[in-house]
Image (tube, rainbow, N blue to C red):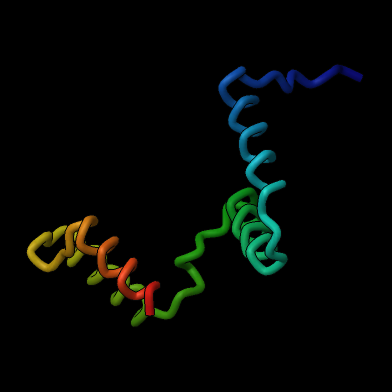
Length: 89
């Protein structure tokens, strides 16, 4: 039996460690389950768009295209001001 070379780069090892650290900070079971399914699909090479209906993909493509048009955006500072006002009630 020949040992398989499973060496990884230090950068990959560090990223894995940081991901595990972040995982330990998530308390919400639903969020963890969503993340689990996402990672499972990623590892298994599942294309998440594959299961989306054509109309949803078209809407997503339109939204992406519209996101490049900055004429209809709100500056971050203004959004934060609105959020603070909303939080005050």
